[in-house]
Image (cartoon, rainbow, N blue to C red):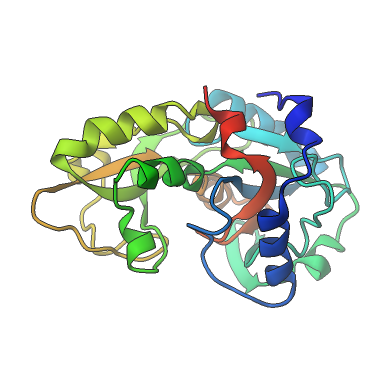
Length: 269
């Protein structure tokens, strides 16, 4: 999706810039609810010879992998926040080698320096539509409990592309049964950041056997009368890294997103 020039040039992004500065200064915490009103993004960084495979993978799987921006090879920058440094301005990074997680770090500068051809993909994040859901009176449980959103690897295979394959990852939010349609309508207005849910209720139908044991993030309370609602998740590329044995990659840590200068309204369909 192309961002209108007015959004790229707007200057009222103080909250987003302040948040990124706190991460450079050492704060490490999930970003749900941080700088409300500004778009958040997942990130995966790959060597140039894997970049086309991933771009094709994202094009074939737009629900979990909606691409917001792609950097030039070797450039740790993005038009979504021109003053930002993608090596330092996320709260927490993951370093991958041969499909295995080898390190989590608040500063990816050293890993980024290993190659001069790295391409960064910024991918839409469902945290973006949490603000309008809260404004509509829908509680976001992980925000209330100050925890990370629960994320699960499903049995739903993504469409392969080149050397990449893997299953979809989903995030889950408990929603009162009477508000599920509202949550779907609100999130559905933001197709560039995953859009409407991919599944409601019956987690076993998508391969989730225990909601209390998420594959990423933290388990959350599900109160009587609430239904687990699942959205496609931008951790899906990390599942592809693992399933495909990608030789080298840098990603955000699940739940620890890049905060852009772009307002949520830019992605409101």
